[in-house]
Amino acid sequence: MAEPISPGPSAAPRADPAVRQSRLSWPLSPDPVVVKYFDAPETPYSAGHRGVDLAAVPGQEVLAAEAGVVVFAGPVAGRPVISVDHDGGLRTTYEPVAPKVAVGDQVYRGQVLGTVLPGHPGCSVAACLHWGVRRGEEYADPLALVGEVGEYRLKPWGGGS
Image (tube, rainbow, N blue to C red; front, side, top):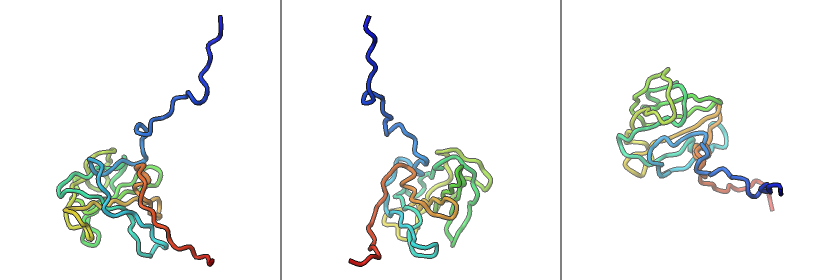
């Protein structure tokens, strides 16, 4: 009796990209349109866009991007903000949001944190959710953590010709 032939490496099952779980999930459902992309500041005090603006509808539910603990829910510069700390040193922020959670609440991935309010500066649609992510003191592109590709712009290289 002949031995069964084992499948080669090319026959190995591959993980379906749609099945892989991203580090974070979208804070709006359905997956939103990005109105303004992340633009990392060159220094901690430089201009930039320290998050992404997502098209929303006033009153739309804002969802926790990952399990964590609410560490802030209140006004910052007159705008209502919610911040959630997650494992691995990540912190997500959401604004402007009318909170349905309070500081100290443990939240799960996909839990309603509050509802989007209109009035985000620079928003070109009815309402925008500004969604930010930090690891420690460094801002990160939220789109990279949901498995999306952000917008990339080439900046001049300081080298001469």
